[in-house]
Image 1 (cartoon, rainbow, N blue to C red):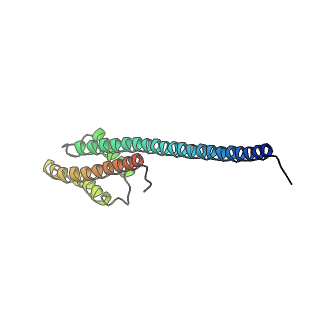
Image 2: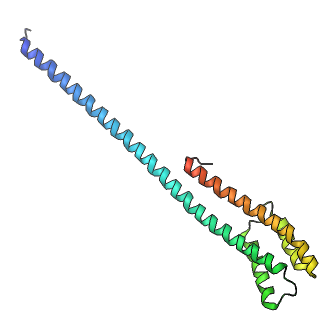
Image 3: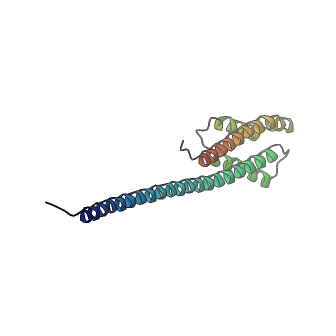
Length: 162
């Protein structure tokens, strides 16, 4: 079979063009897919960070509420000769602390001991002796919770899931 040269060239050029267009389309779709996957990963990181930020916001509000209750209990706890209204506020602050705390927290029992020591104290001297241990355990609790909050935010910023 004798095919003229221009026809062969036309077939070859057509075949190469078809292969080139197909390969170009494949490369283009692959690049689009990679760009889409990268954008999706960025959106997922942003959602995780926003989620962690919101949880951190709630945790900070919880820490602030716990701190306020601890300071209320302490200030009433050292007050000599409590009036009825102050006793009610003292019990309310103590109950709120117990409800805000996790019973499995390693500091919970010590915190509870310090709170009940205020309750058992009868003289001003006994009340003042309860103050320092209570403040120390409160500082330990609040510091530990602050560290959890910072760690969670750092993980969210770095994009890790631990």
